[in-house]
Amino acid sequence: MGIKVLRFSGGLIAALLFFPSVRCSAKSNTRAIVHIPTKSLTSMPLFFGKDKGFFTRENVDVDLVLMSPPTAIAALVAGELDFSTTVGAGISATMRGLPIKRILYIQQYVTFALMAAPEIKSVRDLIGKSVGAVALTDATAIAAREIIKGNGVDPAAVNFFYTQSTESSRTALMSKKLAAAMLPPPFAEETQVRGFNRLADAKDYAPLSGIGLLASSDTLKRNSIKALSVIRAVLRTMLYMREPKNHSELVDYILRIHKIDSTVAAEALATVMAVYSKDGTKPRDAVQKEIDIYREALKITKPFTPEELEDMSHQRRAYEFLNR
Image 1 (cartoon, helix red, strand yellow):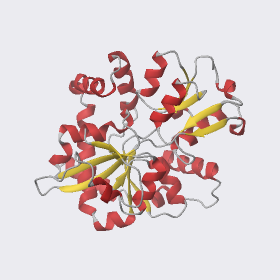
Image 2 (cartoon, one colour):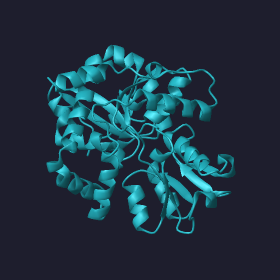
Image 3 (cartoon, one colour):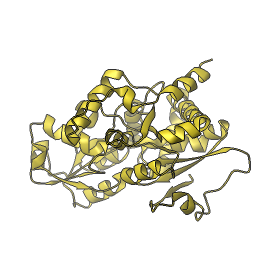
Image 4 (tube, rainbow, N blue to C red):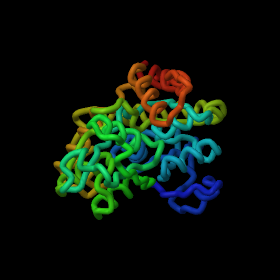
């Protein structure tokens, strides 16, 4: 898949040169370095689009790199990433004054579920126990708090443990180091088949954004064409994924990556497909509600509008181009 796990140390571009599978295209394609937080189905339009050639069609040689959301935000601001997909972590960064903008919504809502050990039957059973989320300001942690509050429990009564990745959350949950964890598809469905309990789905408690695209303001100024090309590639991929005739191909693709039961793969795919944006946007009222949830969680008093967090001009141009 050409996806590498990299650790930010102030020199991401230099680090990429040491990975032999990361190659420069023989053609004059534009190179784009895009962060994905996990190889779960939430990021599928990125790695599936790469493998299907949708990025190549847009003359983009895309490198997908795995790292934790906080690390990715730091790399994005430092100019060592072109784009990040962690729009949840990005919203808190923008609110803190960092020059980052949302430029595309892939998932309008998060697909994370609060999965718990077999003996945990309800959210109230989590009082005094450990719950795994990726990072303090990540959508997984914010969503977990909304779920817990929505079930009449004070989040302060739960011990949050930040794992830095959903893979680590899954491992910790299955090894009984955590009582519960926020997991995306297909990890949630996989653990459910193994007897773990699905206590709640994040989308039923808060309209938080799932995967999208973030870019620094400087990148958008310097590489406007690159942003447009990457967005077009993602939108083409999502259009292909929504075609019913391609469903079996997508399930087979998931099975090759995750080695799970075909029924679980189909269920996980249905979960993510249900929240994919049709055009790369998200309703304004849902974005404003999301902003208000983050402001409350992060204790930010300054008000924000969706327009202050976004630059959707590239999405509009890309969508218009594809619909000519």
